[in-house]
Length: 260
Image (tube, rainbow, N blue to C red; front, side, top):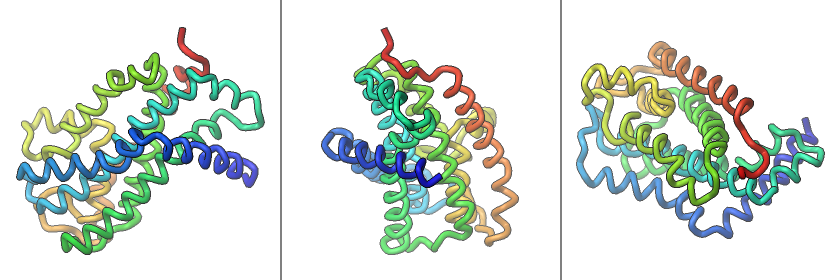
């Protein structure tokens, strides 16, 4: 275990340096989620009973998963594959899982830092309460990170080169943005559409984050620490289901050599 963590950390440190040297990737990872949330908040969209600040800040974590974890990692995995980096790494002592995890380290670190800053900023600037149920919030965030790393791995399989990543990631980005409660609350959608949107990969993550932080996903009175567990069961099961599908897709389709 110590050796595995050391190898993952070493690869993650290298990837962090490469990320820092890529200014476009840094802007995408750090500024784009914040800019998107600020723009949407300025439109005065109905927050489904939540305060505008609570809706925007909790939604920020969803945008971070889409931009920092999903989109950024799709381009990273494709670039490393086409440059034969992944193929060379497999000839060493690292396992396949360690290679994929080490490559994802910068995205995970940036996501966690932004999550901490979001909680602090929400409390200091927007008068949001401290998380009602921190374990549920952390489970939602951690599960979302794992899921979108897996989705990035699967999406990279169908992405021929880095330039094509803007197109191959578009369906997941657009559908999750519009249908997962980041832009519009599910309560404002027609019933049939809301039922379908509840099963999108990002929706359970957003619901778990809001339940853990606010104690509610709507304008209803927030519940206490123990009251959150009941409403969290269904989103958690959906999240686990998507994660299982992601693991199956990764094992079946991921490519380690350049596409020709």
